[in-house]
Length: 419
Ligand code: NAD
Image (cartoon, rainbow, N blue to C red; front, side):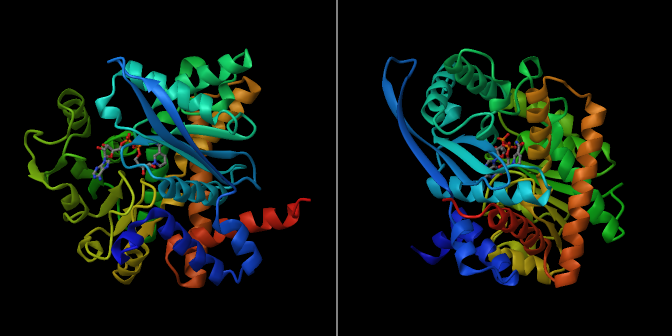
């Protein structure tokens, strides 16, 4: 593979990060072999009837990386660029993420190669129901629990829950998280990822004596993670100076109104052309003058090419895998705190865990209790990782990976090898 393509392959990135932590932990080669690859990779090709009457065959995946600490957990994404390597990387990151915040899940991820923007709601429903049927041999409330990710939402989760329940003959809400409240969803799940990003950013800012009030924030991606982060950081007193989506970015040094930008995006399909803002390119939002940068879109956007131009003091990774290992080195040398994805965006899976627990016991908690529990978990995880980073004089990604990998290795060790 061409060098640059290899560097941006998410699975290659994930394995590189794993090797760096495994090396520092002096993990045995036998254990590395177990943890380096996913336990299970399922690829499915399935037909869906389109509105035109045509039948199109789609390809989807479900990958379970490791289940030694508990059932597999991870989102499902829809997109034209989904690949098996991407899903494998995201499944591995999920294993580490659950371990970093200490929730009893292993890692999984799923994806379907499709262009949801070109499909009608009815087509998306048929695609979701058939994909769910195809992967139902591996998912279940005690084996593997999907959740929303890029281009999937609570409606998609409702279809998954309904399809799985129809097969079993009764309702099984705990098979999936991120559901609507009316069918066993949890209070606070929608905002959970962004809320977690805010909690860890507060901690990071405290460490460098940077007040959040008035801090300039730039956000790449204006979906579930990005748009809600914009609202929460704005409410915290920050100035959201730039945001972007796939079509472009907008910048205003005096600050944007996140709710108005969201309304504009809902009406026009994009943040671009928002009045009272300067139009910038998608990648410019990573480089504008700001104090906090939140990549909240996709993998491999901070690279050896642009990392040197990042002006923020804190990078809080709402997205999974936004920073390549080469960019990590550059940001570390520039003294920029990178709160890594497996810690920064773990609020989503943490409240998913709360949802699963509530579904299993059919007893539901209020939003205040959920936010409070989430804050305790995120703050505890942040402190543990920050202390480890200080102890080893390394960046927070390496520290978080070491923390997670040693916990998964210990679970693997103590369970022993079957048979
Ligand atoms: P989403 O589909 O709701 O939103 C994605 C946003 O990113 C959209 O605004 C889209 O236009 C934009 N985007 C996509 N590709 C882009 C590109 N190349 N450049 C600029 N913008 C681009 O998805 P989401 O759920 O918000 O997920 C975003 C990221 O956060 C992903 O990496 C996902 O894995 C991660 N994440 C999400 C959750 C969650 O609970 N939703 C939890 C943890 C991590």
